[in-house]
Image (tube, rainbow, N blue to C red; front, side, top):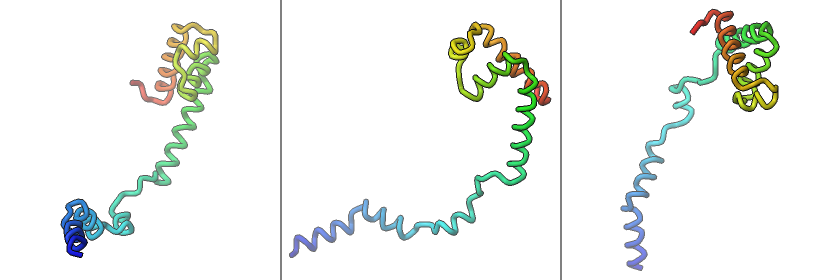
Length: 115
């Protein structure tokens, strides 16, 4: 019986258990914490601005030459690299890079963001 009592006392003194007991005792109520934390969801104004920006980019992309538009969309929408675009379109890798550069430059220029 004394061994069982000592084991219980040891378990109570165990640091790991004390840590979890303190954690449970000092835990923050999630409902209260949600009032402190800023909501990461975009506001309606941010969503509307993003939609307008996407629409303006699509309008600019629609005005690109066919090759520039193809390379631009394959690169940014499909995530392809110049080698993959070369294999699909038959355009040389150097030409793919040139068309991509010119497409990006045209999009930035027409959107008023020359960088």
